[in-house]
Amino acid sequence: MSYFTNFTANPGSNVSNGTFQDFENDVTGNNSWVQVLSSMNYTTATGFLSGPASVTSFDAHLSTQTGSDYLTIISGYSATWDGVQETVTTSGSNVYVNNVLVGSFSFSGQDLNFSFTSANSNPDILGVLLQSVAYADTSTNRPAFNEQVSFTFGTSNGTVSAPTANIAVGNVPDVVIPAQITFTAPAGNTLTGYANVPTTVMPGAYVQSLNGS
Figure 1 (spheres, rainbow, N blue to C red):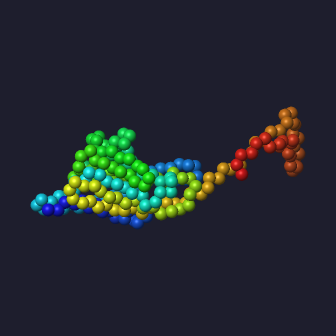
Figure 2: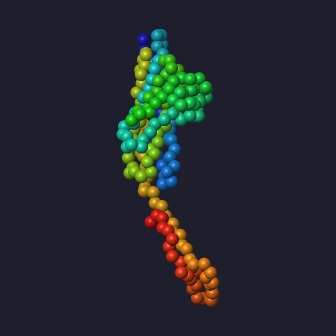
Figure 3: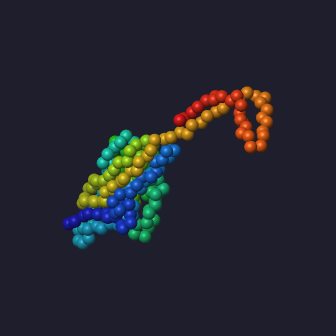
């Protein structure tokens, strides 16, 4: 008897390229989620008394936690597995695939934990859930660093393996606020201009406020 499900990255996917850059954080403070795993395929055990593993849970683990690193499940993520479009949606901590409740998730510290409502032996469902896991670093002022996301699985029967993603998180420079200077000039000034002679536009003006540097 043999039961297993092994996922591998397709050529050109994020994980098969070794690293990918998190460019989603910028000086404006905009942060977006980056998909951890991209296109994958799978193999399962075949033969008499063999088949895919029965999975009860999985854990996505961050190798480091800078204090602003997060994992989540993308609501609305969709991918085609075995010719069928599988769509993941969330409501709070509950997770649905094609509008059917399949489990729930939580994130704490360095781990995203997902638990199935009942043991799942459908590799298509597990595959799209793994693809829907996303990463973000919410800091707008930190040096570049390397992050790794690995997966482990709880099963009631068999074993599961999945790729590990290596993430090169790009440098985000300090936020620089341009100086904003407000001038106030006495009212009632009349300017007289002469050809080829510089004219002071705000005679008697003084700086009312200065923000930034």
